[in-house]
Length: 129
Image 1 (cartoon, rainbow, N blue to C red):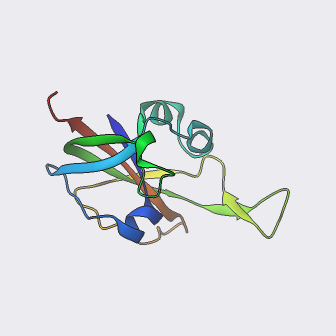
Image 2 (tube, one colour):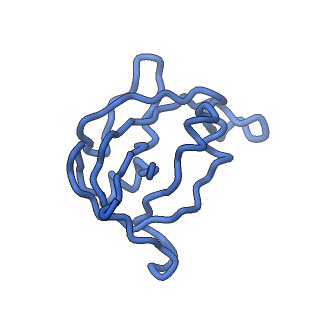
Image 3 (spheres, rainbow, N blue to C red):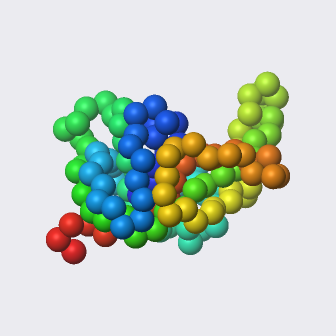
């Protein structure tokens, strides 16, 4: 499975993880493909199957994700003023950049082009697979 981990949730109350480590998360199989589609190529968007969730409305609706991390990519994007509200910043279309990581902390430095960290795309092999 490929799991989206929001940067802000990781910074708030997430635990660092690394390739080869076991993770245990609550999550959902509902992924905001429309949002990711603005930033990333279609094949990357289609591969995201789950989203880790630390602030869900209720644990009853969340899935238990348990497995081993096989790879992690940090996702960055640039922001621009919204066409409908110039004071509001929105992700610039197709500005998403992915960079491999072997470990995570939830904090990633801004890229040279001004792209800022959004979150991680994490490949997880579920236990029992």
